Length: 401
Image (cartoon, rainbow, N blue to C red; front, side, top):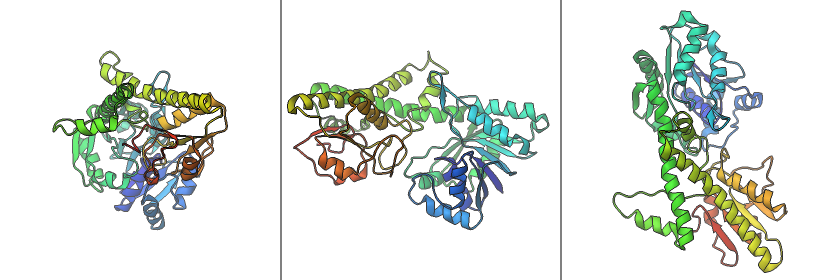
């Protein structure tokens, strides 16, 4: 079987590599020529433990090849971004553009699957687009939706072992898509329709967002009450039916910080809790930035000099290089904009350079700082000894005591 993956980003590339590893003849397509060139050299353009070795293997044995244009195949998988336009309105133009690119290559018996996070009804819209341009294919190809549900930093394991929800525009399409995913997925493959599968992905991440909002709101309450939120949550979770998540400096990433808007934009009057959770989590990052600015001002007033501030972490979660929708990055930007001083050190141990921030080694920044701001609980920070001689703002639980 030959398959074509449209999009070689954080999900498309790993999925293509895993499929090729399991005996599928894979073509990967990306509009970024640099990504294509690097991929064909067996070099990963993202950070994911163990994935570059697999990429080199499937490139070397010829089971995977990257291109800038789609190639004729038995199945096509759309794995492109779905950004926002306007006021958090989902933009499916990339999905449509990728669909139009493969339209001339579709033939009777082709499998067409969307993996991109999408508003409810997107799969049916793409089916209508295909049939309007290629009416001879109606009822003769298989169209389905199958959202990814993986965790950056553990993608290889989760792509293979996680359950998948697969929904076709009809039962035959669902079965055809399940047949493909069964070639490399050990988890259970759950059949449904495309609208339910689309909503399922959005629901999973909206649910997480609501739970995190509770933890973040609790951290604000505890700060006002003078209570250690980490200790409080640990004690509350001793209850057999309570499982409060850990607070942070907000919510980021390509899923939890984004997907709830796909629901609230389409169903604004029905999604009140979901919308409020987004507001709470967005507010937490602004609250953190203000907390840092206030501490810097207090330091200046007390010591009559500008403090050295270490902003520890830019990624949206621990131990990855992914900065998409990162609250830590947003907080750092706000602090830099408000200070206009050169004493702020930016730390992110998972990347070597950034086009906006000048990066500092985490140990150097920690030792030099008057104020330490922990934004992301990276594993490197666990090696640091607590300093009682500096001000520490720990928004992510590095020093929970």
